Image (cartoon, rainbow, N blue to C red):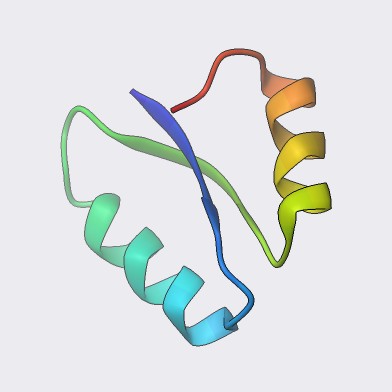
Length: 49
């Protein structure tokens, strides 16, 4: 499963990404500081959860 992590705190984004990257079935394809960034990542990479 591909996911984007969106949060306005960089420490939260990096913490979640670090934890989730240890999961074999999850791929963090990017992080975003706001909804606009998240939308751009989803538009670029297609279907993401």
